[in-house]
Image (cartoon, rainbow, N blue to C red; front, side, top):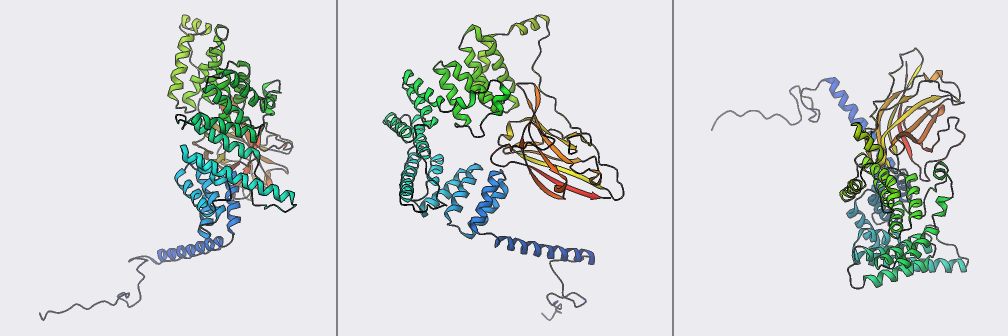
Length: 543
């Protein structure tokens, strides 16, 4: 009542009458305000650049980028390109299928299923790949239905391709060519379901046999079809028929891997993409042992070890193979089983049943002669594992006027079997055109993390020669090394190099090559068909 009223301040005014900027907050200094203004400008520039990138590529060009990134195991970048492609065209069939494949690689089955499911809704009668992928994601009869639909589509597409060839018409370059191997493999997938998940169904046996017969009829040279037929016949205790089937499967691929006389030659001649995946060759070895075809089983297992000698199951199967052959093979059985037991914790294996069986077999075999002597002397030794290394990295060179220091940050290396490598590290060396060391080689510490498909280092290497003092033809080499328990030695897995004209500040991805390291750079063989990279970050600092 009659009291005095306070005057309202006008919005957006300060006491001195100037407009205030609420975002900057009260009490900011002029320097702080200038900094915030610069930040806003930079943000606008970034947004403008992003917008420019968004409109830079077509959907097909974005998806080509996705596939390139997937080939080099750069899934993080692949996801970004995929997301942008779907933003532009949410119902683009290729975008949906490529996204589904990427999600499968990343282990996100639910989202992959959504992508492939949408592709089916949009185009149910064209494109078989989506049905094959859905078959992997489904179970039981749902999976069978997907594979059957995929086979139906493949047969229709093959018929169309044949008509185009007969009529000399041009085939659609974007349509994948359907082969007998594709159809045979689909029938194999159906048969495998009736051998495993749906084996207790009343008609499982008939459906399995029918699928395998169709697989073999479609492609008689498909080793997987004959392998599964052997497994089917064994499940019915038809040992003779199983032997015929497994020997036929072997005849289609084992000769390629057994021509070499010694281990080094056999490893060098190992095909890039073996006719059967690793897991199916392990299954082959199991069937061979069960059928008492020991010589063939040992050849298969030896080939598997040449490809990767850090798989516990393969050492266990070698031990079991010798164990079942009796007294004369006890020493070999013991050696292989002990090695399996030794690497079990090192490689992170988690098959408790297999571990228990290894221990039971070793207990039954008892100690070898050397172990008995050691026990008698009280000098029993335990297998040693390599001691972790802290590396041998050197400090930064002292500054020199006009000279440029080079720091190379080794971030990560992409490998198909990244998680399997024991105590991996990288040796960095600087060599002239003749392969002679210009500086002392440096070893990084053991990798900080292994997470398929990458081994992470995130460590800085200070190159021990100024860039201006490197003679013409100089190159910097990177050798990826890891410990091999079987040979009790450190081995080179692959190598890479950078030449003088590639030394620029910023990120760099360099290709990986097969061993042995060629410091003269004359024999370069890529590690895999799909490019894999060593990822670096270079910093050049001029004093």
